[in-house]
Image 1 (cartoon, one colour):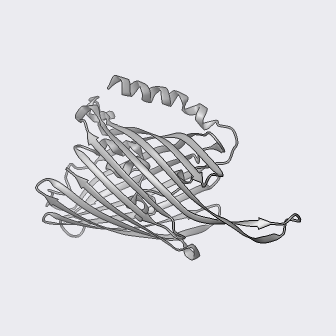
Image 2 (tube, helix red, strand yellow):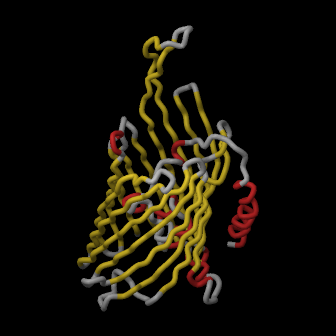
Image 3 (spheres, one colour):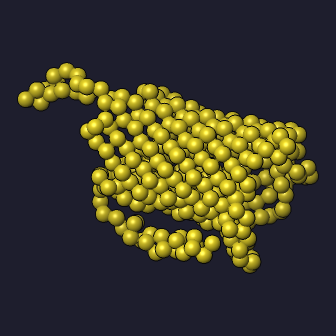
Length: 335
């Protein structure tokens, strides 16, 4: 445990140097693609809500919520023959925290090159080139409430994830990057209750804030990684209007290097029916600089508890206008 905390401390000391990285072009597409089915269905407003394996790409502090074993399979269907597959595994280690690992593969389809004559004029089509990205990730989250007993730290969680990413375009181009995410979540518990067991009156369960620095690192071939900083708040109610439900609201703001500020808001509604949980999600985001909404996102989830093993299916829909639509499918197993 001390070794892990020492590594985290060293990284935090190096954080200012990473943030002062010189100018360059952010690269590695796999680091730019929006991830997290639940998060994206809520418009990306998930910084404070992140928990379990979903948190690994959103806010690694949420890894600390993993208590046993978790497996997550995700398949993203994009436009123009592009798809994105991911597999995650996480395990809780009690007071020592929780860890998670991931493997991702992004197929960017084929691109037909164009030919030019000596004067620079169009001279027909060239060969087709295929591209792909990959990423290996490892993350760790700790619940300080299990380590330090005081009023502040009992609701504080922190985490870090390390990522090795690469991209290739046929034999013409290859790139490699190493980066990290560092985040924290602080929760104010208004009244102790559990969604799966509470059957009482309406409860304002908890409110929290989240903070994360993403993609802090460097690309070995073409400049810096697409760094970003995000902060979010959330609140949660149980038994709102009707019994056995869970209602969560999230609002985030993030700053992306080279892409400005985005504001995000989302809503999640979960309804428990005996051993089943049905969930609906909706969200949107707004770019103040462009004064435009990027549309809406929506998603559905269905979970089933069988003798302590939870199976959860999630779907998210993200429209991209004339480019097409993005469909995300995920299977979560907790045991």
